[in-house]
Amino acid sequence: MSGSRHTRTALVTGASSGIGAEYARRLAELGFGLVLVARRSDLLEDLGAELRQNHSVPVSVLPADLSDPAGLERVEQRVRADGDGGDRPIDLLVNNAGRGDGGPFTGLDPDAVDAVLDVNVRAVVRLARAVLPVQIARRERGLKGPLGVINVSSVVGRFTANPGGSVYAASKAFLNVWSESVAIEAAPHGVHVTVVLPGYVRTDMSRGAQEGGVPDFAFIPKDLVVRESLRAWAAGRTVVVPSAQYKAADGLLRAVPRSLFRAVIRRIS
Image (tube, rainbow, N blue to C red; front, side):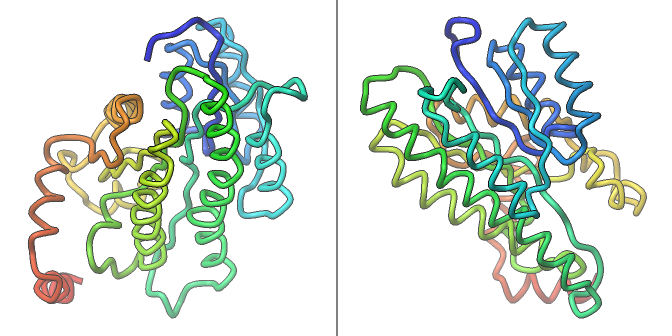
């Protein structure tokens, strides 16, 4: 992923903390200019100031709630930029923002369910739909270097049941299948779409799991997720499961019959 400083631009959603902030820091180290998207403008401004000072890269912040149609439209407009209007086009879109649900499905607030689907599914699809045509057109004009999208999913989307997190798991299952499909369509144009499937990572979203007794060994570092997914994207790989332990678990659990997996989940739930 070498290249001239400041010649590439990445947009990262959910950039204010956790995995998103780790993506921003790593991409700044690699010389990417950045557009940082999240709901909290104060955290974005702090991160932007840090990255400008430490890495001398251009950073702009775009506060937006991706569950809100107006917020999503503002980000869509930015990723559609092709360079003619002054904004640099987006070489890498990192769809990292996510929301989770907790508790039995019938007890969930319908508006909260909508928010999970809006952020985890609708926003990801809309942003990719906005950026990919621009990237394909740039490639057709002879642009060199990696272009594309990284979608941050979850290994839970590979399994068959996740009681207490049904909407979240289903949204990630959608993201996994959709990402692989779009990757096949984009590949002939020289545009890479990669989906990363981490397990437990210490972030604000995983605080409940941390407090609920999930053992320390189940958590993997944020920087591992970011490093492995960026390498996979640059190499044109479609699916990456970070860490040896989750690669092994993913292979094992996908080999287990779905009926057996459901039976085990019923017993331990």
